[in-house]
Amino acid sequence: MSLLDTELALKRGAFVLNVRMRAPLDRIGIVFGPSGAGKSLLLAAIAGLARVDRARIVFAERALDSVPTHQRGIGVMFQEARLFPHFNVEQNLDYAARRAPHARMGVREAARRFDIEDLLARPVRNLSGGERNRVALARALLSAPDLLLLDEPFAALDGIRRQGFLSVLREIHEHFSLPMLVVTHQIDDAASLGGWMLAMANGCIVAQGDLAQTVLTPAFQALLDPRDIGAALPAAALRTARSAHAGAWVRADHVLLAAAQPQGLSARNIWPAEITNLARERGDGVLVSVSTQAGPLLARVTQAAVDELALAPGRSVWAIVKAHSL
Amino acid sequence: MPSEGELQILAVSLRVAGWAVAWSLPPAIAVAYALSRAWPGKSLLDTLVHLPLALPPVLVGFLLLLTFGRRGPIGAWLDQSLHVHLAFTTAGAALATAVMAFPLMVRAIRLSFEAADQRLLEAAAVLRAGPWDRFLTVALPLAAPGVLAGAVTAFAAGLGEFGAVITFASNVPGETQTLPLAIYAALQAPQGEVEALRLAGFSFAFAIAGLAAAEALQRWSRRRLDA
Image: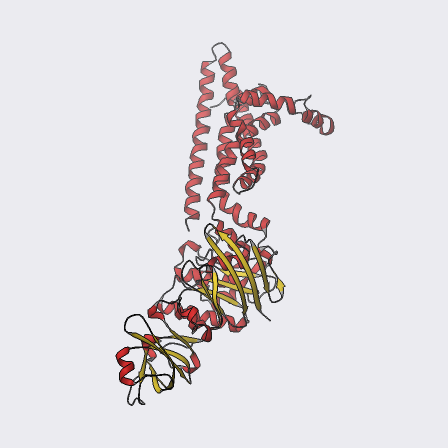
């Protein structure tokens, strides 16, 4: 049972971190929140890298709070790769492998898996951002941690590289059954990794639970930029333009509602839906909650559309999402 | 070309400075590492380490004589149990030089411990490296250029130590007579200026070589760690 059960309190100047969390990490745990919420500090405290005023950290029924960092069995992939500059790539990987209590894979195998075989002899200062990232992840895995914490590991990546890295993370999670806690402030990354959501703001956990459900709570939606408000749908229910992830974030701005079954549309996701709620926003917007066979969705429409389509709770409509908006 | 007597002086100088660096390097690394971290009592240690810089070298030599001389508490013990004599020997000259060069060495090494990225030590910790492991495999290698620079600076300074050496170890040709002591002796002798000037030339050569080495090490370190 890979339950992470934690209570932490610490102060850094005026900032106070006060966290109580229970995350069953048989699924990927996501620590989500705006910058300055204390996400990195939370990770550092769990790993034993931050001085805490009060802590109870239990992972997989092992109490870790008085265990020194190097004996916690917690690996960390930092935002900056933190490769050792006095070693080359291979020596960086060896450093981890030699200290691992058991070998999950060899240095060569890791290099092959992360496509860094050609870099092994290189000094780390000659690596690109993406290469550093892969070396850092390979190094973290080679130390065979019981739990891997990842602090915005894809911050330095964009576009296709980011997508690729997210797939690699999911693959590792599944292949090695490795419990992971991933920090991100990007809702799309959170949705595509899926799993267990821990939402943070101002040093506290404001919402936690199954990702698809937690993201619909008002406490969670309040963390989002208005343009990002939406819902998470599982990949299985969706037709997307991208390779398969756990799920995707469907923005309310990208959901169309139709009063009658649409015909001859290019959109790939069309579901019958029932309106469960209407909420007026500031300005002209109305957020319409609907339930579909794919899961609950939010659609943002204008007041004029509400009037014209006679949208009201209980009414049956059709929800439409373009594959390329995901 | 140096004469036989001059060769002896150069040999004693190199031996004294070499031993001085060899003895003081390990404690200097330990003290520098301690001073690079925060702990209570740190400023007291800092003051103690820097004392030889502020005290007159003659006084340092005198204090050494009081403690390590044959009648001093440590000197007497060394004499009786190990039959080691420090006063008036090459080893004694090296000890006096080591004490005087110690603060210089600690300063250089401490700076490079402080400049080393703490985040790399954290990275090592989460890769299961314990405190000693982290020190030996990350902190020390990253500080290596500073350690080398500190050793070179201390060696160069050691070649020139005068007051503490002459007070504690006296001016014994072939035993404790280093370059500066020989220059002093030459100046005391009638018509010794020519000999003093020749010795001064060797001093210059050593000094310039030492400073060039320290500079080269510093450039190398910057290149190596500029990751």
